[in-house]
Image 1 (spheres, rainbow, N blue to C red):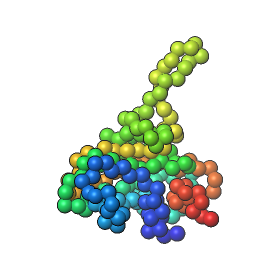
Image 2: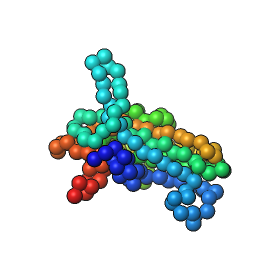
Image 3: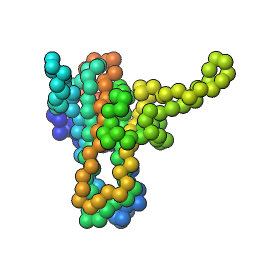
Image 4: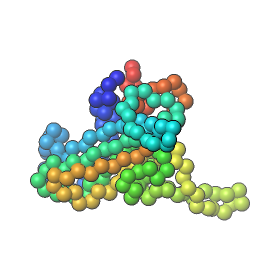
Length: 182
């Protein structure tokens, strides 16, 4: 499957929250002031440790992917309250502190977000409670507060994820949407 189709399928799953837009809510999606372009690349490391980003059509466990979303305010006015989001699909694990910009929030449920690393209280065998880090394998979404987004500007957010799926090699869109191959 070619990369353009992969991008289109992944763009559908991109979670976007835009609050307090000065644009009319009745505007059709094709006239939306916010254009989002999603891409994914395979991270390849050569013998010298140099990284390159390559197009990817098939993935296997252990592969590292970089997801990027370019947010473009196409309007002639600033947008406020813009939040950029990237899902962490099942079969992938977010790589610790790989998000750019680094001021990212993470979520285990796609609803409640907090600064990375996520924390939670766990009960010890003694009955005491202790704050612990949430394992990165439990992260399901990433979010950036873009705040005031000037007219005709672009912002890129990205994160790296490792393929942990144990089945045979799959395409990136099959990891995001298991029904895409049917």
